Amino acid sequence: MESTLQVEFEEIKKLKSKYFIDIGASCSSEASQSEKLLEHGWSGLMFECDPSKYSIQIEKMKNKSVSVLTTKVNPDNILQILEENNVPDGFYLSLDIDGYDFFVLEKILTKYKPELIISEINEKIPPPIKFTVNYDNDYFWDCSHYFGYSISMLEDLLDKYNYKIKRLDWNNVVLVPGNQEESISDIYNEGYLNRPGRNNIFYYNSDFEVVYNMPKEDQIKFIDSKFSPFVNERQLYSGRQLDGKEITYRNYTLS
Image (cartoon, rainbow, N blue to C red):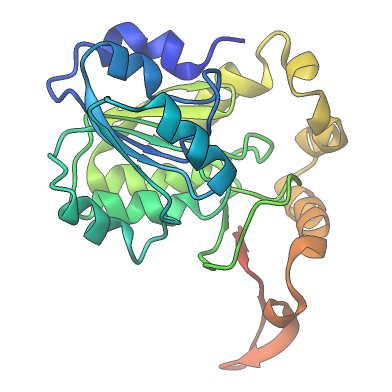
């Protein structure tokens, strides 16, 4: 399966800014979004907080016009880091940290206007359900289904910052400036749910297949039951009263 970067590369090369931000850069040629851009004369800023991957990146990126940081990116530090590194606006953004990606993206958009964004989503969660891992700096992905955000979480963000979904490529959403006119459900169905070969490529999502034929209320209950075991007990308090209303505290949002 070609990476989304490979599919989009001809368009990415046409961007005015030849600068990229790669958050969650990984270490292999298959995973890195940046090597091909560097080969075409771009410069950029890469983040990889896994020390084993970082050491490999340093060797691979020697004498390249790129900075590689071990900083663990979060919504509280991302703007300061970009400012300290004199990042120019209009960059190409790749975002894949398998966690509270949504809040990092939201924070970036408060100050910057990337020309193109490729962000991983949690492909299992169908519209119109809005799901995101909430920001907890202690969070690390445990290779379970519990990570990232659903495509419908983008709905309000697109309107607020004037972006649109160019397309969904399996579990990567491609965003560009503009007005969102196409239905997010249609984009999801075409880019993931009804796409030929999905069950073979995403065989590890087989236990989620039942969710697509449920009404929304049952979908939410199903997803909640899947994700609740991954919530730290100190962050899950069911049935607590707040202003007379029964609520549930979790380190994820699901609606």
